[in-house]
Length: 109
Image (cartoon, rainbow, N blue to C red):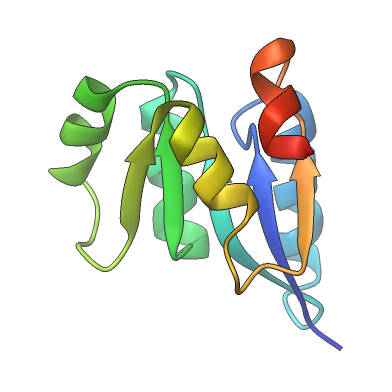
């Protein structure tokens, strides 16, 4: 059975390790959503590799910049609302929360 995953904090060490596992087992895992705080260069690479349906970044300015760099079929959100949107996406049946600090608390619960 395929697991559809959202990863909060995909550009950090835990998130990148999780994506390594997904890459090694594509028959078992598909990425639905990814979030990053400010590292949009790495997030851009992850989007091109895993083709998530939704991503989120820290600020509107970063979201606007990212929109110019990735395919239009990926929804881009930002801020706390963006984290929550990724964590609660209806296509995701598993969420890995590796966001540091209090900002990861609300989307995780």
